[in-house]
Length: 419
Image 1 (cartoon, one colour):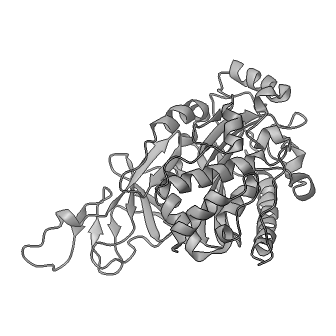
Image 2 (cartoon, rainbow, N blue to C red):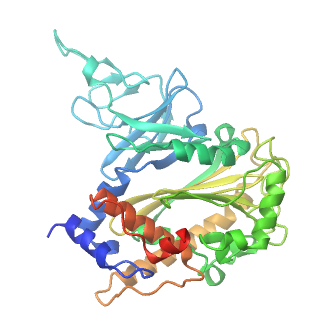
Image 3 (cartoon, one colour):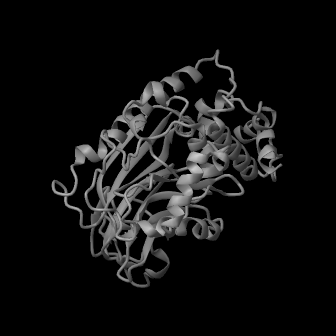
């Protein structure tokens, strides 16, 4: 039995409301199937428009086996290409980020325009035609300051996500912001364990003292059930919507993404140790009220986000191996905010740097445990881990669709939501 067939059988026989079987978190063949079924098919968050402000600005990333370069062209368009020279395959851009008038392969100096066209290939002789040898394009879209790519030959329709996300994010002008700081850590755990940990706050009180100063651990915040009936959240939605900020809970029909605004605790306005703003200058001139809580967005399989009045924090998840995941965090502030005057890096980043490191340790201990041959799938906490169950349901359904199983049968959790 190959891995795809085994995976399909395991998904069909799994116990709903329980963790996935061990192989989903440990097996190299299952990991490769995740890449092929999800990361090579779905839209993936890769970064922000403001990281490539000027023509020639670029950044690179690795998605599974694919090196990618993202560059802004002379026409202002942002494009993504396979970062592989059409001559002998060397990476064209090796730096994490940079700026150049052309993209030049360091191996033999084959040179490409910012739109991917091959401009120069030395001594290739008469009859050489450069036209079919441009860099291979990758689907790339900009949505309210967020950049997305899709490696599939034909990308899924992103219009519905654009229509839902833009009203939430447009007031914050993230396309005009700047990256104040970024960090990248490697967690020695399967990418799904990283997501499962993110989708609940059942673990927050004993593990995240810094975050719990401002972020509510209520299951209605991290979960997918109950937010509509929580008066604390409903009152916050009403206040934000009166300011012109869309706020109400939006969950896509397939469960892949959700956007909502949540209040912070005890009149806090930002993720700082004091609860006070980390940045004196608001993130956007369109949103001058500081007490707007946090706009949350998750979009499987690559990003979760927190957008506040003074800054925004984005997280990008990319798998590196069966038991290794890269998590990149970026803090965005107003484009004219000045470090040392309007904000201090330490104050801006303390809470999430601490939380990221705590989550890394949690995921790594989780990985050690599920890697044991004695591990058996255990039950989720229905009150506190509804968000985790929702993620697992999305993962199972998306994987079954990719494997050609057609629409997945509605689970008890999905039927309850639809009923």
